Length: 458
Ligand code: MG
Image (cartoon, rainbow, N blue to C red; front, side, top):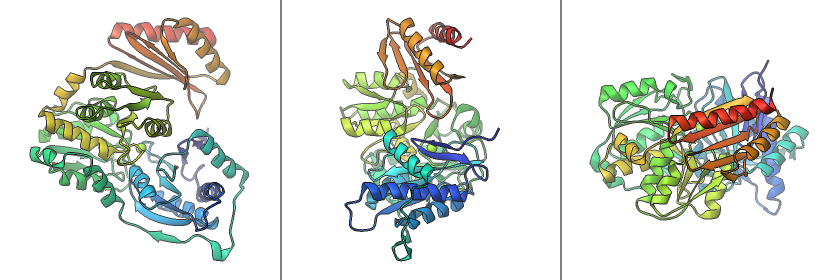
């Protein structure tokens, strides 16, 4: 069966040539432009949107189509060309645009591409806004303009320079440079290679870059998980490097390999970044309900708190803005610092981790050891909406001793761990995340969830 075109809070994603075509992309551009015109009806001057793409071969085609769709409804477009997703987020604000578009399917395999939308504050649209844009798309309700009023297209090549300057402004560049760290970087032939090599050079690092050419021909599966990064681990060992960094194709996520060549797990990216930030400042952190308790441990030691949000980058960013958080992000290696932009940014994560290493004179494995760890297991099973609802109800009756958070499914917090059950927004699937201190406890909660599921889905 052909995969569905997915339109969610984070934009549109599909398989190029099957369900994601130039005409679909143009319609989505017109839908976004129409939405922007309706919400900025008071503005006299023509609205503008900046657009960038990752390195996928279909990026040029989809970008041209989205530009055509935006221009057709009278939106001026600033073409940033091949850039990272956080780069687009930064330029939306830098250029005072009404919106931004990143053509990327993020960590998904090569046959996919996607269209990610950003609002004028650099954040992905919240759910209600995403729904409105989707409705314009499905109704083909487009505010086309006549020839003299079509949007004009200009180009801007300042994204990388602007991005690097913003990140360097928030870290101790001298302290990092003095250490002359040896770094291996794996950009999986995505958009991140060129800009990341430049910032690492500015930070005085000796860089061995692999898969750094932004060809869009990914040399391994692009999600930065352990099984996809064996090549990076090997090069870190061979080079006797201090650290290995892996980005996904649009460079918003970062995974880390320690000095022994061991993949430490994406949950540690946010934990290490937070450890760096909380050494010097007090303030709140924000993350979603599915992210490790390590962040709470680090915040607590600093006398601080973590705001938990529903899953979705836009929710974390919104909470960070609301609570003026000094750090935030997601357990998938996405780190957000509002001073750079309200969007996950692997360059921010890299800078913080290097700063932590520099200021403590500790290796990655020592820093990971200090944070301590948990066992985390992520699972999913098929469940329709009604079954998902029944499972949540039964779970509430089962886990009565837990502290319960219901902003996105149910998260049950116990003294020895937590369980998060939530229905996927995009498919009839229930996701289960369990995090505990030891393996026996893991069995206890996995079995309990399994019994609840069997009770409802026979
Ligand atoms: Mg990504």
